[in-house]
Image (cartoon, rainbow, N blue to C red; front, side, top):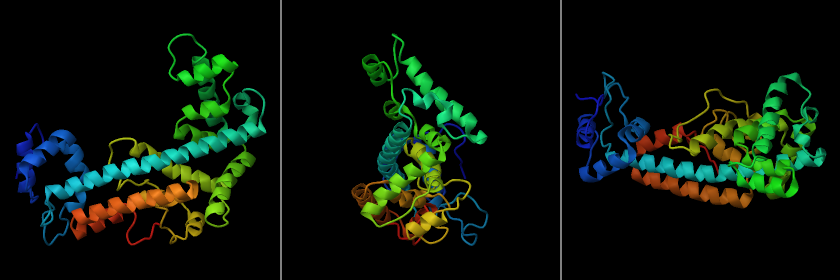
Length: 323
């Protein structure tokens, strides 16, 4: 049996796949797909649910496809994952905008002086936060400093605001911080502010679904989970089976969302989808849920039952109800 180690033409790549039991009905279409998508990214990224792991059918553990598996099935999963990334990224960006707005508003409300965010005394007094606090202050200071210069600037909007007002407030700067940076910012501000911001999310959720309480530690957990998914979604990486390596204790959030105990702790795609309900407007979440259901049904119609169930399990769904 041949294996792809060195360069192989698209025709040879398809020949190797057929040797491993994968049916390629339309070779011309398959070659066009490989020329666009890259063999490694497509096949190595999405072959797993279609491989035969039953020892009775594959006693030597070779790379062998399940009976009935087709090239089109792998490509259908690849398309599903791309749609999932775009769908998830769109709503993660809404959450990102939401938390940036709340953090800037509450911090500026409490500390009203110009450049108050550059004062270390306006952050958590706990020594374990000092290193990250100093990094955040340095990042904000450098954003302002770099845009005072008269040479080329990265963010013209910061320059324009500075030229007009001679300072740049936090509610402007947060728009140019990454989700990772705003996550760290939220972690190192004082506990009163942290609880107030978590309370803002709880109030919005309560107004649309029913009364809940959200603690700062709960919002920490949500951020810890969604941050890597936001980055994964922004790049052409396999998303549907990605999960954080270390489970999180999310008992209270599972209770609020009426999920089974432990169903969110694996930090899977299912976890992220469920947690988004806590931090998005109800209208946005319902539209997101409709679009997600549509692409899941498209996938179900495009692949055999056995790999579909494996895909859903890898994404954290199983038989769980996510709506």
